[in-house]
Image (cartoon, rainbow, N blue to C red; front, side, top):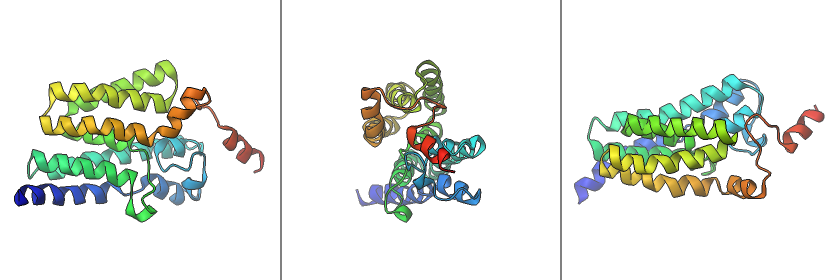
Length: 208
């Protein structure tokens, strides 16, 4: 029991440290855009970075947030599958609750996709395809995220190790809870569509 705990705890901490790197915040500051937490929704993820109008920065944030999840899993996988699962959990939680930002991080979707690719590339591919399809149909980034993790969970039980499938299933309620504000806006019909500016953003532009 103790050896199993050590086997999971070490990779979990590694994953947490990697996952807690706030690329959205770092990139926007480096670009001279200030604190991304004061823009749009205040989130440090790629969707909010896109609200700065810098598509390249948003794409870089998305890629790096996903890659830190992939990296955590692949490094830990050198020890074993259980270690990889521990690192995957740490990476997602690190992104959502980074100690450096008073545990106020992103919603975890890009990093969740990254750990899916690391644990099982077919599951990652299914999740990404689901996101793209839902985004194309509904034009809501948040809804695409919610549905893609939901699609990935049963796929994981068919295509990967039960321990990995268990983790990816647990990510569903976690990601949904982190999107609770988006869910409320979706239900009210005032969630911004992809590429649509919010009233707050329009106000910011008008005062510049």
